[in-house]
Amino acid sequence: MSDVKLEDIVSLAKRRGFIYQGSEVYGGLSGTWDYGPLGVALKRNIMNLWWKMFVEDRDDMYGVDAAILMNQKVWQASGHVDTFTDPLIACLSCGSRYRADHLIKDNLDKAWDYRNELGELDEVIDAKLITATPDDPKDIIITEYLGEDAQLDVVDFLNEKVSCSKCGQKSWSEPKQFNMMFKTNVGPVADESSISYLRPETAQGIFTNYKNVVDSFYPDLPFGIAQQGKAFRNEISPRDFVFRSREFEQMEIEYFVAPDKWQESFEHWVAKCKEWFKALGLPADSVHELEVPEDDRAHYSKRTIDFEFDYPIGREELMGLAYRTDFDLANIQRESGKSMEYAIKGTNEKFVPHVIEPSFGVERALMAVLVSAYREDEQNGEKRVFLALPEHLAPVKYAVSPLLKNKPELVEKAREVYAALKKKQGNVMWDDNGNIGKRYRRQDEIGTPYCVVIDFDTLEDDTVTIRDRDTTEQQRVGIKDLI
Ligand code: GAP
Image (cartoon, rainbow, N blue to C red):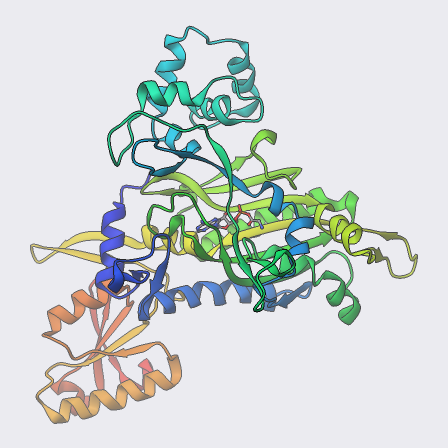
């Protein structure tokens, strides 16, 4: 787990204009977040970096931007209508609703002790422990209560040991499967035929355009189609800041391969994901690979690696890499009656390609970037908070200030430097608010790598002071060199 506290990240994000609670002025809307000026800049930098690394810099990648609303058949064929569910449990006393697996996870020690008290530590648990190798063996308990072959009655345990965090009662409903897709109707008539969903993953907009891209571009296998965009999930209990939201952003690649080549492509993408974490500035030792056991994999996956990050809330999923086989294209072929086969050039050998899917969540990446960059130190006996963001991600790269804002000659010169630097760099901020110490503190907190100050010497020799965020060291450089 990271040493950084979640409340420090949340409070900095709000104070400095990165992220606000959605609809805050009306009391908020749970699971939604609004990005402020710096948050949107940081998010765009992350998304643009991804697009550059995985689309623009590669010859085998094609970008798409599909509609969020899709024909309901997409979600029937993909299995989401039937299986995109989480176990929902309700407090019978006050009606509060919880995700059953989270409720057990939050009370793992009690669940383990209860299991012991029952005197039922049997071979099932031992056998599962050997194959599943979870970080905490107690995680097995969740499968025992809620897995397909659940061994224990979750309601008995909860009624005995776990109180509702809202009303304090121990009275629980049976868990039931809750579909997480947001349902809506398209057009003025609300009937079965007009049902649509806000997409819960961007992936299906890629699969449904696979044939279009093949027909337009005739790419050689392997090739990928990439998409960035909003995804929506009606999470039972959104929590932990933007980590589990109801509206979030995904960056997904479906990489189409010959069926017998999936393993080498999978390894290729493991390596690429690691390059991505490095580009985000995440320390290598805070990212972990979890080989997801069969029981816990999504219905379409034959192999999944979750890359987990040491967040302040514990080690949790940052992104996933899955071998989706031909599950999606074969479903589309069956349900649409249209061939999804790929014909190898030259031999004309035909098959439905298999798919490797690296699926990146923007919010979780952004949260990992903030956690990795968050620092506290002491300067001149005072606590300082700063974000050591990689330069290419920082929302503001240079802040330009006149030493004194009531000296027109300094302001005029500073405006000149600001305009020239902005023309060259784009993400440059004018900052003349408060004294110079306050400006430095503010810029440190938003992760600005360089503060440029125009003073009386500048008027004489055309040099400025440039201060480094991480070391706080100041240097004198010529304006020409700076620009
Ligand atoms: N197409 C595959 C797919 O959607 P997923 O593991 O369900 O797989 C992929 O989601 C990524 O999307 C996750 O690793 C995570 O980064 C992000 N994600 C999923 N649910 C999220 C939520 N409720 N809030 C924020 N990010 C989420």
